[in-house]
Amino acid sequence: MEGAARMKRALISVSDKSGVVDFAKELIDLGFEILSTGGTKKMLEENNLPVTAVDEVTGFPEILEGRVKTLHPFIHGGLLAKKNDPSHMAQLEEQGIKGIDVVCVNLYPFQKTIEKPGVTVEDAIENIDIGGPAMLRASAKNHESVAVIVDATDYGQVLNELRSNGNVSLETRRKLAAKVYRHTASYDALIAEYMTNLAGEEQPERVTFTYELKQSLRYGENPHQKATFYEKPLGSKFSIARAKQLHGKELSFNNIRDADAALQIVKEFGEPAAVAVKHMNPCGVGTGENAADAFSKAYEADPTSIFGGIIAFNREVDGSAANILKEIFLEIIIAPSFTEEALNILTTKKNIRLLTISFDEKNAPEKVLTSIEGGLLLQDQDALGFDDAELTIPTKRKPTEEEMEALKLAWKVVKHVKSNAIVVADEAMTLGVGAGQMNRVGAAKIAIEQAGERARGAVLASDAFFPMSDTVEEAAKAGIAAIIQPGGSIRDEDSIKAADEHGIAMVFTGVRHFKH
Image 1 (cartoon, rainbow, N blue to C red):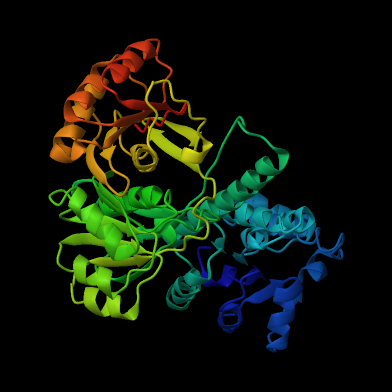
Image 2: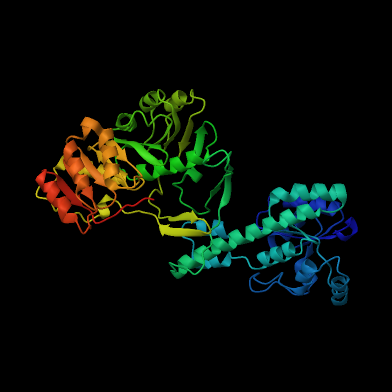
């Protein structure tokens, strides 16, 4: 590739045909012979461009419904030969093989195929490309001699360099080769995931995930940390990565994490709900007749911490809700939709971000990835809800109907609070949240102190069992009427006895919700 005279053959075979006709025409004008196959060859011919069929080069027809066409020494010899190695060039001449200088290939649409509702295994398998990845990997390996293009957005760069310099620079060829390997790795990762699921493998010996660039971020958790936002192909549609931003500044790293936390909580509720989040923890959760009513309760839960918070709704935001929201400094409001009136009200605030998201797949199962230095933890999402718990009531007093509704709300929220976690609530809203404490009674004291006088007659939820009776004693001092916790401590009897002494109803769920 050290001169224009050697840049004479280009192989073009693409599934994504956007821009390919113009690209091929420009190459022909620059003196290239075009080799092609199948639909790409047909399209180029229909546009009156001279094309040489690959089977003319190989002297062998496409067989097995096109499964075998480019897997031939006359193609791969031309791709892998080192142009600056005399012995390689002598072997090509001896075998009657011509070199290939530019390769433009992209792959069968495997991802689009398996995204289709009701796709059959047969269709999925047929859309696993074999010849395409082989040509791409061969060309990328030999990027010292071959310019390989897998992305139509790179056509312009390659053509500009060919026009200006008669060749493609080594720097560009190397970048193109790196993109090829990212592309084929991502392609294979999706296939591996599909086949692993198809085979029912739950703990494969190797696991590979692929993500696509969604957004370059200004910085990470802090200004000195670089960060980027990637989206999982075929991931849940109930995701910040799939949200549509209607207004406001671009999202930051912390915005994205907080918004995700708010969504995970609000999806727990069937009734109209509003969730306010600060630093990955809920500071206020409210339910009501509509969005406005729910938000009023979420605000009342903690009017101090909600300042600068992220709000998620599971109902449309209308004008009534918007009029309340506009009076408070908020970073983000997320909802299934906004009425035109609500948008007119809220978009007067320049910096607030307004996002809409589909709730159609809110219960789609997802794997949770947690990185550690030098490793990765992988687990199922904590999808167990209140209805999945097998409730037992070990205390003499049973919860009233109103207390049980409050216990449900508290349990839905405490699941999403950093451990050790305690939530105090009534049947419509949270009253106090104790998050991320090193001991459970410490979390209880924080939640109870925040609730204040509102704790009297309210309920308390704990994400894990009580190792001793001290949390019950703190609850009793505040006038808590009922408690919900997993149970399972070797000292459960101490907590049950304390609850009975103070007339507190206690419910065991048998389900722990640690969130580290």
